[in-house]
Structure formats: structure tokens, C-alpha cells
Length: 456
Image (cartoon, rainbow, N blue to C red; front, side):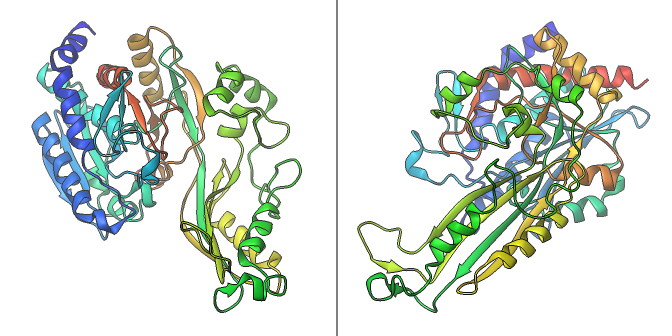
């Protein structure tokens, strides 16, 4: 451990400078205007893998953005770890809410502020630097492969094809991912499950054109009003989702499991204070920890219609739209939930409007085993690095490719994230603590060490 700490200490400024270089690329996969920047980011990642000591580094083309692959095989007889991450980021909008430019990383209060700082550039780059550390100190105890993609934030639509076509190349014993959060530096944790996702868009159309709200208001249905009514009807008075059949496949936790989950450190008042809210909201009968990790949800991610520019325009809009995501829990299937939503939304739409539901992407929920060699290696690594055993938690987010890896490659995943829930993921002023970045670089080599030892 001392050798690891010394290497990090000797190179910490360079490690930070390189991350800043990576963060300056506006690699927004959702917006075509950033296409060239996304491609430049892939080339940058590939070069840094080569610099760290990886062999057979390749920027692999797909029907969308490329996947960066690299490996170091020290002995075919030793276990192999497949490191997954993504170099694309969410759009930075709304730009006016950022305190500093989103693609000019800035340090405030020992935190790095930039789009992608935590999700996932800062986290996957820890693995690149940990790999360099192991190579330079002759401490790489097992084989390692890297697969860093550029479409995670838009659904990883081409990753499945790549995995299916490269099963032999990707053959490994475990997938290691740092794209999740832990409770805190004082209370390190390991996520043992993730929710799935169904993401879609709805459009409500009324008249064949925008209308004067004085001339037609009160006689023609307003699509914006109807859309709001339809969305409001999707939750009942107990904040349960009203779509018929939505909960049919939900795997309910036992009381013992619920009690264990709620033993994780959590201060409700601090939670509310951090978010500047007076009270929490959610499905009746469940704690906040349960609601954000083990219960399905339906959220409006964006809504628009009519005139939203400066000043006034008294218009009755022809159309109104919303983007909606549903987080899913074990046993729920994204395709089934998407169909249930579509059928229900079309059924409840009144005759004075037309509705259109467009599915975008989805992913399946997963639960990772806590008795595997890989999970025990992660436990030991965190215990040594942090000085205390990690707490098992359930993550509220979604990484759809975890289920894909299990299906196509037949291997499980370890979710060893170093971010925090308060890192403003997908929001303005995304951040990542410098201490967490360095701690990840220190901890990851210990995972490889213990995984190799426990695999014998």
C-alpha cells in the first residue's frame, strides 16, 4: 500500500492535469454538433491507454461513436479483469446555471467542477492511471482489458453488437465498473444492484396549428393542459404509478432485507437541506433509501409546448411534448414496461387530442452477487484503502450494459464507484472531489491484487 501511495503522491499533479485535458473535450453524444469532439475524445483515451502500457489499443468503429479497446495480457493462465467505462457525457444545458464553463474544469473547495468530472470521465480515468501505476511498479497481478465506449448517455445502442461480435476478444472473468456512487469517504460502500430503465417521449397534438388563445381558448382543447393532466394521472394519492400491470413483476424485498438496507448511514434532515426542500416525496410505505434503490419510478425529464421565449405571446399551442423515464427493479423488463406505458397512455387520451408515444432506449435491472471472488476482492480492497469495511447498497441509477455483459459474456460485474450522490450528475455544476479521484487510483490496484490472490 505504501508503494501505491508514494506513486500517486509523486504523480498527483500530472494525474490531475491529464484528467483536466480529458474534461475539456465536449464529448456530448446526444448532440450531433459535437461529433468531431466526441471522436477526438476517443483518440485521446486510446493514446492514454497506450502511454499507460496497454497493448493492441484500437479505436473500434461502430454504427455510432467508436469503442476504445486496449489490453495487457501478462499470462493467459491468470484471471482477467474487463474494465468498462464511457467517455461521452450528458449535455451541459442549461448553460446559464453553471457557475463556471462546463468544459473548462475548475477547482473550488478541493472539488473538480466540469461536465463529466464524475460521470464518467473522472471515474474511468482512475482505472487508466491505476493501470499505469501497476505497470510502472511491476504490480500488475492479472490480465486487464479496457472497453471505453462513447454512447452510454444515449443508450449504448451499438455496444451490444460490438460485444456479440467480439466475445473472444472480451473474454474475461469479471467486469469492473466505476460509474456509481458510494455513501461517503467516511462510509465507503459497494453497490450490489442497479435499476433498469425505460425512456420514451410523448407528444400530444390538438388543432392543426397554433391558435390565438383569445379567439379559440375555451373552445379547443389545449395540448399543454391535456398533457399535464395525463402526466398527473400517472401517480395516485399514495404516489404509486397507476399504469395497469406496472408492479406485477416487481420483486419485493423481505423485511429482513429492508431492515438491512435501512441500516446504511442516512440523515434525512441533511438530505433535505442539501436539496433545499421542505419535505420529501415518494411512494407511501417506503423509506427514502428504499425509494431510490429498490422501488420503480416514473419521472418527467422534460416538458415543453407553446411559446417559451422572452415576453408574452398569447397562443394556444398545436402540440405539447414530454420526455419520461421509468426506473425499473429486479424482475421488471424494459420492453414490457414500455408497452404497458404506451398502451395505457393511448387509452387514457381524450378524443379531442391525438397522442404519440416514441420509445428511445432502455435497460434491465441487475443484482450483483455478494459472495463471489470478485466482490470479496472489492471488499478487501476498500477495507484496506479506507480502513473500514464497505457497506452494501442498492443504486438508483441504471447501467444497462451490466445485464448485457452477463447475457453475452456470461460474467458478473463489480460496481466499485467513488462518486457521491451529491456530485450533480446530469445537472449543472457537476463535480468530483479530488480526494475521491486519488482514492480511486489507490484502491483499484488493491482490487486487482486481491482478485488475483482469491482466484487461485
